[in-house]
Length: 232
Ligand SMILES: Nc1ncnc2c1ncn2[C@@H]1O[C@H](COP(=O)(O)OP(=O)(O)OP(=O)(O)O)[C@@H](O)[C@H]1O
Image (cartoon, rainbow, N blue to C red; front, side):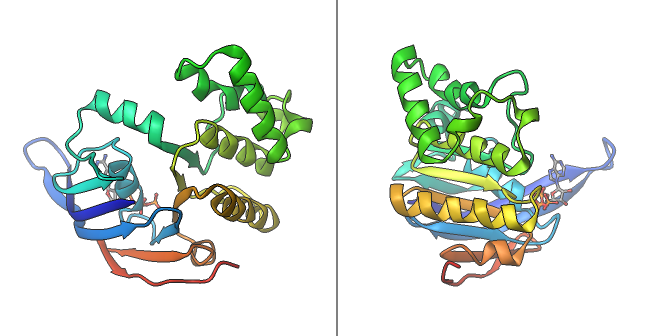
């Protein structure tokens, strides 16, 4: 479970000496339960990415507390955050962020290399995962030889390969057409059910948001409403 308590963050904007402090997150308090799909929906500039960056430990909040599975992560050093991320979090981005010089297989294998897993174990794991996500046929393709939907499936496989309990997805369907968007959302839902992975999905799209179990709405740096929704 992730608990966020009284989280505040501001950015200083403008010329040196004339900076203006702009509050972006104003006292956010909410929980994400284990095995839940949560979406955080809001207009451009409402602070969604800032919240995700703080939850994942890329950015230190001005104040407030974040706990992940009982561990207080908000006071971690950069090195502690990096280690924690590798073991607990996977990431999926709107523009996939695959390494262009690596094949689909090698992209999925990369996090295991970073964790120091041996070659035979790596290859076995990647092969199994790619098969279960229906990527075997394209495993030797480079990213530019894949469709958008295939690239996003590869990036989801890369996020999953280290078995993280939580995956953060920042506009995961933002670059996809509506049919492929549904495919990717169904994949996320099936992985959530089959493996119990918690997903935190950031989106500006209400339709995407409502495929989650729980929807939080960001408005002017506050979470203005929550609610439970049925998956499509
Ligand atoms: N590094 C930064 N320095 C200064 N201001 C920033 C910085 N990052 C974000 N902001 C400001 O904080 C506000 C929230 O930005 P954020 O990227 O979190 O919003 P968002 O909801 O994710 O938007 P989008 O959907 O367009 O990605 C915006 O007004 C933005 O200009």
